[in-house]
Length: 372
Image (cartoon, rainbow, N blue to C red; front, side):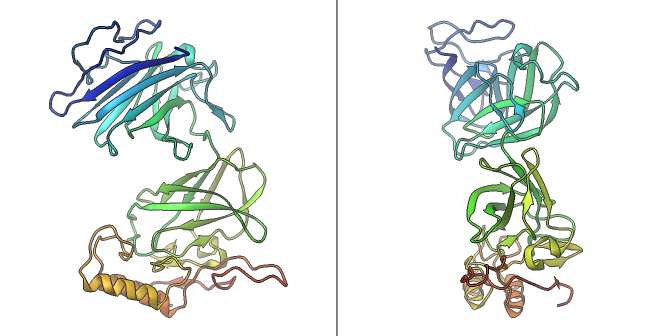
């Protein structure tokens, strides 16, 4: 089977938490792990029992996970950026678009450690690749996998993806770790989590976009963006986009070392190009109010917010500038203040005798919500 073991079709049922199998099942050559075998239709087996592992995976949780297919691949390991995964990985496909309150465990033998993994702390972390784009991301934290010859790692189930493990958080693809807060979303203690997009750009005019990645920030504004085309020690600008904030560039070109770059926007407005941020409760935040994402906070954005406020619009909408799921006077006030201050995107200047890109000047002043 060319290294692929096909589990067939399984279903996690809502009430009984069982897995039912079709007839297309295969028995691997490995031992000490419970696999289904034979050609007959098998009885349902509980997914909540650790010893019942199917192709080295186990899925548990509440509710229906839909129809699942699992393939286990051994042989060539996944490598990149000086890191190496274990020498096996699992492809899991689910008919459900969203999988909540579920966990998956992957189980492998120490012979798949590639000789160098887990030799010191016996710690492992899970990785998944949803395939679009083909980017590896870590999920969950480090866990002890030294209990037995059969390594076992459990983590949240993200649905259809490829899963594997490594001994390091060092990314399988170059990663930008950034701390970013959005005006209106930050309350002085925590921020509302939301999707951000980072664009890696050339360090010289016209600052071409070389790659982009999305990430959901945590409640402190931490986000990880994974890219496939970063060269160590080469300089790049990067910009951050948010659904209703002003696109913000880093202050100066940066370089990645060993595939990693950390950048904190929140400790000073000067960390953004042109100091194009605002101080909220002691933290520098991206400026809000660019609802239509044209690079300016102006009357057109105010009109969109005013219309939605008049219609009592609620939910996850771009006109909700403070993330409370209501469009109202507070959103209008934030946008109006930034429009009054002619807030816009600030970008590096074009060379002499070159028409500059749209988006405003190349300098800015420090802004605060406490007083401008």
